Image 1 (cartoon, rainbow, N blue to C red):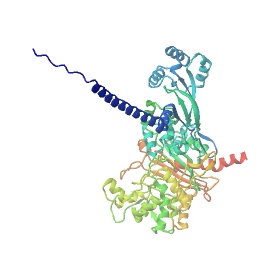
Image 2 (cartoon, helix red, strand yellow):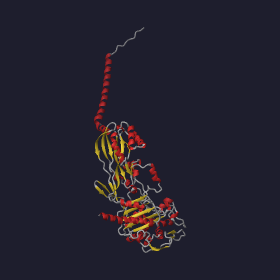
Image 3 (tube, rainbow, N blue to C red):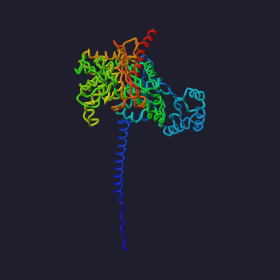
Image 4 (cartoon, one colour):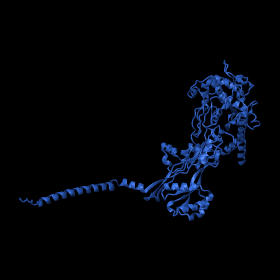
Length: 626
C-alpha cells in the first residue's frame, strides 16, 4: 500500500494572513467607531438645540387659562348678564385611600345620587389618577357649608369654584341677550374655520343666541397661559411662567331694563312682540317677545325633557317674535305708501275719492275688495284716508302704482330686507314682486295680486322690527338707520362707541309729503274720526299712531268675520305703531299681538301706557331724584 504525503504547514503564510485579517477587522472597527462618534457628535452638538427643545416639550407643558367673560349692562348701568361662582365637589383618586368608603360617606353627607356616582366613575376611568374629577356639580350654599365643616375627614376631596354665566332677569331678556352654553363639535368647527380655536382651549361656554352670540368675540376676551413643569407621569411639579388672560369687554346696551320689565308686564301671557326705539338714534329701548323661557336652563345644561317641552309648546316660546315673527303688516304701512304715492304723482294732497265700502278692479266683474267699514267712509282725501284707515283709497293707489313701484318704494323703507339689528336671529320676511312670485309659485303676477298689498296684506309679510325701522324712516324724513341694541363697549382703557352701519337715505321726497304721512298719524290718535282716538283721549301730549288688523285666513265672498265663532289661532292679529311726542319724537313703538283682534282697540291702549310711562312717569321719577 502506497503511503500518502503529508504537507508541511507554512507558518509564515498563515501569520501573514492573520495579520491581514486583523488589519481589516481593525479598520472596520475604527470605521464603525468613527460612524458612532460622528453620529454622537451630530446628536450631542449639531442637533443639541433640537433635542433639548423636544426634551423640554416633554418636561414643560403650556396650559391655557380662560379669560373672564365681559359683563352686559343696560343704559342705566344695571347688570343684565353676570358671572357667578359655582361650586363643584372634586376628587383626586390618587389621594384617596379607600374610594368606596369615601363615596359612601359623601353620599350620606351631601345626598349624592346614584347618577352622580355613576357619572363620576365613568369620568374617573377616562382620567389619570392624579387629575381631579367632579363628583357633584353646582353645590348649594348649604352643601358647601356642610362639606367645609367635614373637609378634614376627606383626604383628596375638595370644593373648587368656577365662574358661570347668570341672567338675573330670567325670561324677560332671553330674546335680547340669548345665552351661553357648552361648546359643542359644531362650535369647534366654526372656531377652527375662523382661526380662533386656540383662544378657546380653556373655555367651556360660548354664546349661542342673541347678544351673547353676536358679540362673542368682544365678550370672550383673550386666553392667557401658564408654563408648568411635569414629571414622566404628567403630574405638575411647578409653574415656570404665567401670562394672565385679557378679560372680555363689557357691553352697555341701549336697552332700559325698567322699560323692558314694564312692557313685559303689560303683555302678560299674551302671544306677541313689542319693540320700542329712540327714533333719533334707532337705539332699541325695549324688545319684548312673549312667551319666553329662562336662559339659565341652557347655561347649566337643559335636560332632554325640558327642551322637548319648550320645542313642542304650541305657543312657540323659543321664537323671537320681534325679529323672527313674520306677519302681514296690515294698515300700519298706509303712511309709508302715502308718501310713495305722492312722490310718484299717483295722488296729490288735494285728491279726494268716495268710499262706498268696497272697491272693484276697473272694467272687470271680479269679486270686490271690501273696506273694513261695510258702509264706507264717504269722500276722503289722503290725510283722512290715513286717519280713518280707508282701505278703498289704498286699493286704488296700489292699482295705479303697480307692484313694481310699490315694492321698490317699500324696499327703500326696509321691507323685505334685514334691518341691521345686532342679533343674528332675524328674518327678512317678504316684500313681494313679480320675480318672487314666479320663482316661488311659477306663476305670473296678476293685477289682483297687487290690490291687497296696498293695505299690507296678500303676499306681503314683515317683522315688528322691520315695521318700527320703517316708522323711524318716516319720522326722520328719509334718513335710514339700523336699530341697535349695543350702545358702547367698555374695557380698562375706557368706553368705545361702535360706528353706525350706513344705509342709503331716501332722497328727493318733498317735505310736505313726509308731513302728510305724519299728519295722518297724528289724526289717528287725536282726530275726530281717528281709529285710535279713544286710547289717546285726554293725553297730556300729542302723538302719532297707526293701527292695523291682519287677517290670518281669507273670508268667502258672503262670509262675515266673527271672532267669537272661529278658533283662536284663526283670529286676526292686532298691530299698532306710534311715536311721541309729535313735534319732537323721543320714542317710537311697533307691536303685534297674535290673534288679539282689532289693532286700534287692543294695540292702542298698550302704546298709550308705554308713552305715558316714558314721557310722564319716568320724567317725574327723574325730577324727584334730582
